[in-house]
Length: 275
Image (cartoon, rainbow, N blue to C red; front, side):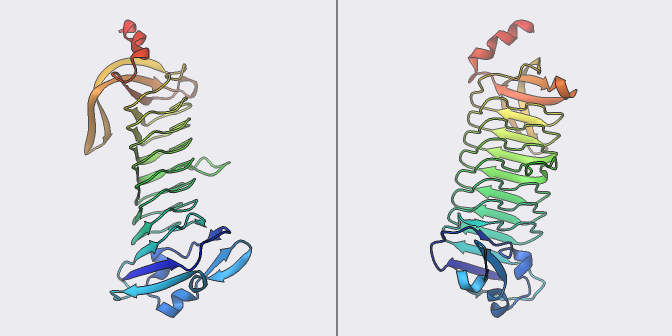
């Protein structure tokens, strides 16, 4: 079943819409969907009050649901939060907490996504064709439960602390990343095709951060392990290039790996004297 959602107005207040979730719509009639509750600011609303809903290809209640959101929903938070199956396609910008704690399924955004996209996700896939905000895949303040599975791909740039406290999974960033990428990482892989802000990998215990673009410096609490000709993203994909390899963070007795492209970072060539 395919469910198309069209915003009925330009949203000015934050919308909390955990009901925009394939698991929540499975097996429901059009009237059932219209009655699903959400919040607009401090007012309780229904999905039908804020969105025009159209259903196509209706099928059995056991079949997965595809939700297509047509328009800008950058003020709509928690779309796809906790989802386990199905697919969400957003033809516009998405709000905060997109796909937070998701277990399965796929979310595709043909626009930008705000902060905490994929926060604490455990499975599934998120693909963002624009930019993403801060804390991509990272936990909320006070929590150490980072990303534990799944895959996030961002075509553009991301903000600070992408992959913080990450345990498993893959994050691929084709633009630039902000500061503290992979902060307190425990496992998994973060690939940055563009440049990366300072303090990448700080306090990491395990896992890998791969920077193909420029990095100002490696953390001083990492050791230089040499030059490698390959960095593996996952079991099916590797990057063939010359990388400086640093291991740490020693302050955490860490064995995390920080790969930094050799040709884009000539200022790190002094480390070669240690070989």
